[in-house]
Image: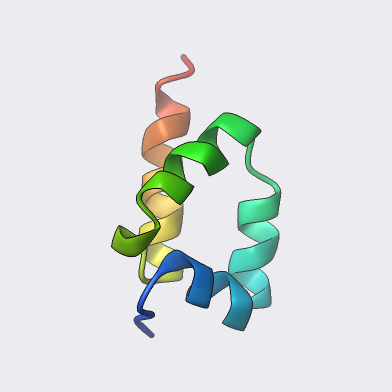
Length: 57
């Protein structure tokens, strides 16, 4: 698993991560962007998004 300095580096480098991020609801992207320094891999991006989406139930 490749680690990146921040989420911005991740989505700049990984089309898969960028497509996933772009497909998320706005409020989830906003929450993730506020903690971009803590998102350093596609797995952490997906895990964080899934945790936020779980709150929608």
